[in-house]
Length: 169
Image 1: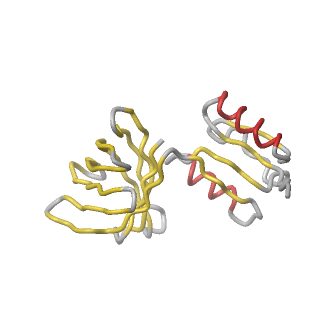
Image 2: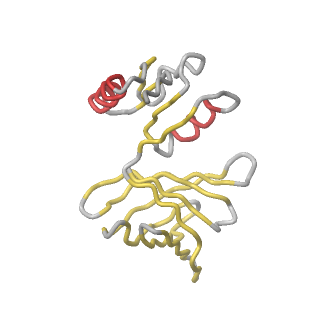
C-alpha cells in the first residue's frame, strides 16, 4: 500500500531535508515544498503532512500551522524524553522516564541546570523557560551535552510540573 499524502519537509540542514524528501518521493509521497525555520511558511492548503525538525522554536510554530486544519505533524528529533515527576528536594526536581532519569535545578529566574542519564549517556546542560499566554504550560530551550555530543535542548510541559518532555537534537 502506497500512502500519497502531499508532504512538506522542514529541516534546518539542507542535505538532510533533500535526502528526506528524496526518500519520501521514492516511497510515493508527493513533496509540495520544503523550508528552513518554517520559512517560507508551509502551504497548509497543499500539504496534508508536515515533517518538521522538532526543536523548541519550531514546535509552537508547527502546532499553530496545524491548528484548525487537517495537517498531520511528524516531528523529527534525535531523542524525545517523556518524563514524569519523581521527587523534589530544595531547588531540584527529578523526572524519570523509560529513557532515563534527569534533574532540573533552579539557578536563576526561569533558568535551570540539567543533569542525569538518558539512553545510557550522561546529560548535562542548561535551559531557560517561558510560560504560555494562558499560564497552563511552559516551553524550554537551551543547550548541553549528551555523552560527548553537543545537543540543543527543547521541550516543555504543564505548569503543574507533573510531567515534562525534553527534545534533544
